[in-house]
Length: 119
Image 1 (tube, rainbow, N blue to C red):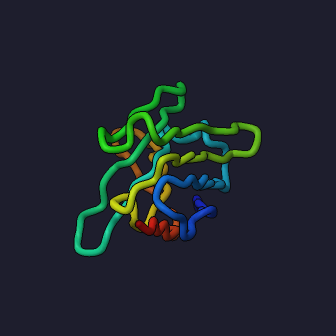
Image 2 (image 1 turned 60 degrees about the vertical axis):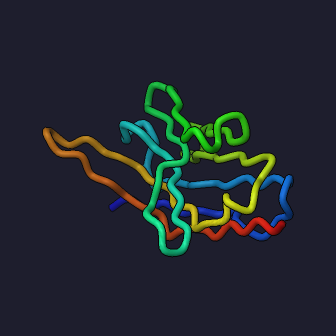
């Protein structure tokens, strides 16, 4: 069983910063990738940023240059540093981990953490 525990959400003014953390219950090298998704009310859940087991990163165009995904392999934790936050960044942010088992890919999700950016 894989558990992902997120923390770090909250309320911040536009232009401010927050750092989200996602602690995994097993080595993050057991996943082919980990990432952060977000879902605003009435909208679909979209990828924000991801990092592969090899360390390659990928970002949504809307957050490039403002958000940074990183990891601490000793702590089995992935971070999302969010700078220059905008009201449109308001959403529930979910940590995701993908595990490859044979031909199948399994997705694991955290419980979500609310990020609210006020104007």
